[in-house]
Length: 114
Length: 113
Image 1 (cartoon, chains in turn cyan, brown):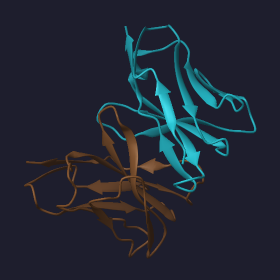
Image 2 (cartoon, chains in turn green, cyan):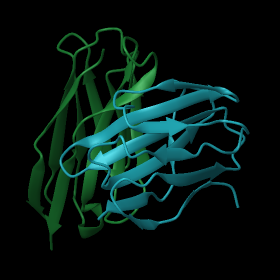
Image 3 (cartoon, chains in turn orange, purple):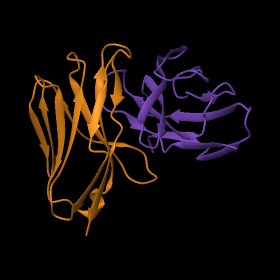
Image 4 (cartoon, one colour):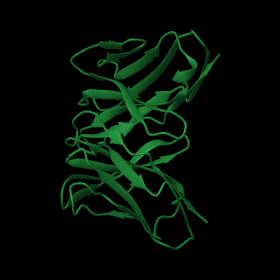
């Protein structure tokens, strides 16, 4: 089945700087890669996703890039703000063991210092 | 107001007791899921259901049971066989399994004393 590795586990940046979180996956059949944001004490919410037929997708200050050959994808947040502080999870669809369910990385705790 | 509702938000139980966590959705989604969240462990899939009266084990199903008697409801029972039940439990739904966004509930925090 799919295995998703996420790095770093914690990330601290100054307000206005950029933040990058990287994930690798193992199943070359996976073709859907979402990112979820979980603020403290709240539910995870989808912030951006990408499918394997595109290499990059942007939505205002966030972007996701995908390299299918290397089997990794990254979340980029520009001009970070204190409200970006949260735990971010990457995920990939599992076409092996869980047959289409999402397999999540272990999360990255992002802290944006004002 | 459409969404997915979990209850209770906090639950304390003694060791050896079974507990049931409720999950209800009014999004008319076919697929529902239960995830367990532990610090530093991400979200791990316990059980999922694609349709009423059908459900499948996820990666960490041992010590848990579910039912799907109605489309809107997918309760999770944490049995006494679960060796380390203290955790944060998240229910989610999606229009169909493997398709697009997961919508999560607010979560239930279970503490076994």
